[in-house]
Amino acid sequence: MKVLPLVVAMALGSVSLSALADWQLSGDDSRLWFGSVKNQSIGETHHLDGLSGGIDDNGKVTIEVATESLDTGIDIRDERMLEHLLAAASFAISAQVDTSSFDSLGVGETLATSIPVDISLGSASTEQEAQVLVARLADTRWLVVSDQPVWLSAESLGFEDGIAALQEIAGLSSIDRTSPVGFRLMFEAP
Image (tube, rainbow, N blue to C red; front, side, top):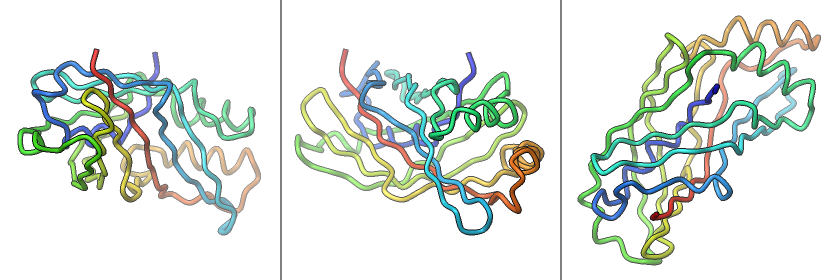
């Protein structure tokens, strides 16, 4: 299965390992979004809803997104982006978190923090820093959202040729080579 990296995996860093051992991501309540700009002034937001993953009792964060869940609002654009950008054999996020200092976060409280992650697409890899806001909604439920966008460059993930192909196919004068990425993640105890 193809997967899309979720810069969001690092957001789990603000949840207690003891509290979240083997917690699962609720795919129905989670989403990844990213923006694009074409022809210098037309901005659009796209999303992926096929998220899965969790955090294990050692603090290893793993989140994947089914690339087939890409929704740009235009079917042919979805097909083209899947073919020219997201065709890699592996697309993953990895993060190692130590969340012991967040054990005191109570139900209804929030915490803003920064988490480093490594994003890999095939042989390309980039390390990013994500600013996240974590809210403990209940004893067994956490919401993690991007507090500000994570900016990914096409070059960092080897997308230059794919974006050039999309630009030519669509007859566009330009497609920006940097995109903002954001997320909403809901985690639940088993």
